[in-house]
Image 1 (spheres, one colour):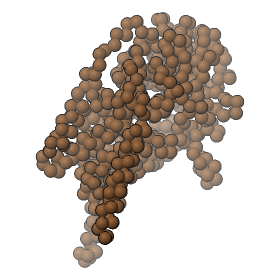
Image 2 (cartoon, helix red, strand yellow):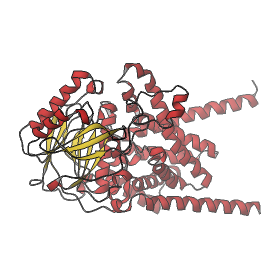
Image 3 (cartoon, one colour):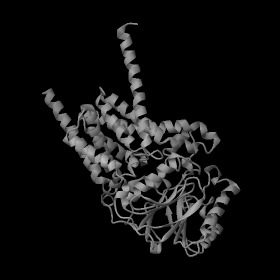
Image 4 (cartoon, helix red, strand yellow):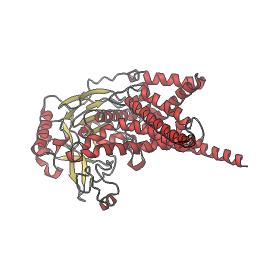
Length: 505
């Protein structure tokens, strides 16, 4: 074989080897997320991303580089996605395909960021485009911001910045720190700006979040009981077994101790609301003087099923209802269902005919002396902008969830981490009741005040902390930063077009 023929072949092999190495970089960075929590790895992964992007010869190769890093990162971070497919033995074969396509799809956002940064021809442009890509990931196609890099900074001082700039503002700061670290590695030394960014970043990432703010006195605060029946997903809807978990929850509800509110998790009762009068009465009476709120499916007047949280009085009468409005694609509804059905594709996540109906949107529930609460059902706590969409500022947040779908390792712990992010962003306490865990009372700075461990049945009575003053992010949301990022990209693009025009002239 001639050298002319061997060289392109060898270059192709070397490029694929590079892509595998880039994927490994992303995979290592994923260990910054729960349950491993080696937060420094996220900064190292992103710094390497800046370095390898600058070495990409073309915009296409840059995009492939970003995609490979993202594929490795999301492949590890989202590995819990195989768990839902394992509930039914007939769908186990779909698990690797589900993980592959989810990781590949999420990686496309990072590919876009790397491609755009190369097109803009500024070595620092990836700071802006990477942040913008993560913001798009939270909104596009209903959004899926799970596993964002800022999620790994929860237990550090940097995590408290969520209250001021939100998740995408923290992402922007993390990108700037990674760029400064990359410049230091490449140049062998750090300039004044790079050194300042690195010093501030190191303090923010390593300093514990406990340094922020005084500890509240919770002695005279209202108390919420968080009920965790620990129902495995395979048994949650299974005949008589399902009702043993209802009996368990009723027993926890009757347990001694003065509480003001008792929370059961998502879909706590294995029947529709209109068939559950006896259970509602039993739950209301078991609560005594305490209000009981629980998750249950109900049929609306339009015959659509909705995933709801209902509030009961002492007689078990439903006094308030909230319907989940941000649904899980392919789990609670099927996008383009008619097209999929036409080619014979049916999805196991679509358990209830045509899927679930959407609620009307964010809604506050009144819990008397506890104040108003914004309820979130499961997946809704993943979205910072959903929590910020409350019609008025609540006194606290509630999340009820069935984390049995997420497996028994990384998934539930990452879901808890996102609930903690929402608490910090809004400066509000969050009461979380999870079927298999982790049920927890979360303080307004994201701290865990009391909890029931993962995969354990039980309950915990936890004081409800006071809310902090409204945070800057709770007032501003994502729009100012989003507009700024788009403006910077447009300015860089205009600058590049001007340079290109001058060269042609």
